[in-house]
Every structure is written in C-alpha cells, then in structure tokens.
Length: 174
Image (tube, rainbow, N blue to C red; front, side, top):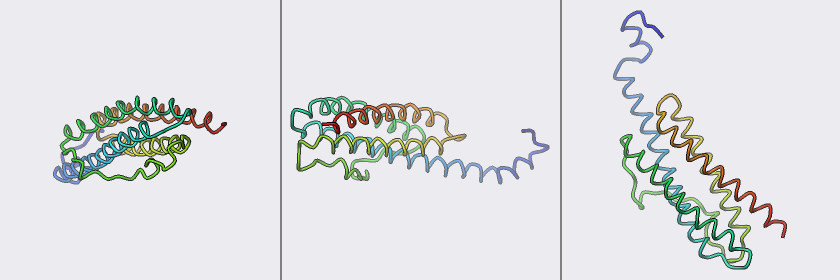
C-alpha cells in the first residue's frame, strides 16, 4: 500500500504512539493467553500423572502407559510456552498464580473407571485445542512466530485427542 505522504500513515495508524500502544496491548493479550495455555498444560501433567498411577484393573494398563508417555509431551509444550512468554516480554507465572479448572480429570473414587479417565482426557484435549485456536487467531497478522509455534502444539493435541477417541470406542464396547 502506497501512501501519498506521512500524514496518510498517521491517519491509518492513528499516530505512531497509538500504533505502538495498540501493538503493546495486543502483545499483552497474547501473553495472557499463552500464560493460560501454560497453566492448562501443567494442570494436565498433574492429572495425567495422577491417573497413570491411580488407575487399577486389567483394562487400565494401556491407558496408564499412554498417559505416562504423554506427560513428557505436555511438559515440553509448557516449556515452549514459557520460553515464548519470556521472549515476547512476559513473565512466566509461578505455581501460585496458575488457575486450575480440570474438575473432569480429578481422581475418581472408583479407580477402575477407565472410561471416565478417557473421557476426561478427551475433554482436556478439546479445551487445549480451543485455547490454541484462540491464540492462533489472536496472533494472525501480529505475531507469526508465536502463531507457528502454537500451530505445531495444536497438531499434537489433535493427535492425542484422536488417540483417546479411539480408546473410548474400544473401551465402551466392553
């Protein structure tokens, strides 16, 4: 887009300071959403560890192993998010500043309820997928590096959801 003079740019951007402030506000919103994703990943790690240890019964072994293996992937996602938060000017929150909301993945009284755990994992993955799609849209045209990183994480979350949907199909048959 060509501009006739520098005043054209001022009209489109509402002045240099306004453009800078808009960019900072957008960046703060991206950081806020990345921090929420970071919290979600760490909460998922806690709940996957609990489920992979607490589940009992003959039918639980495959799910326990899958969850235990997924813990490392979720930690890696949290590390990527933390690094990006710092890189774009944020501060990575400590444990006391992290929200928790995965009531659906809390340990069950019936430690043989494998289907409930599988459904909880699917719900957690769907929450992560929705959150990452939100960040992708928020970053569009503003922060392509964050957007690219989140697209990569999103692909992993979608694969994980697909795996547990497959487990659910089989476990609900019996």
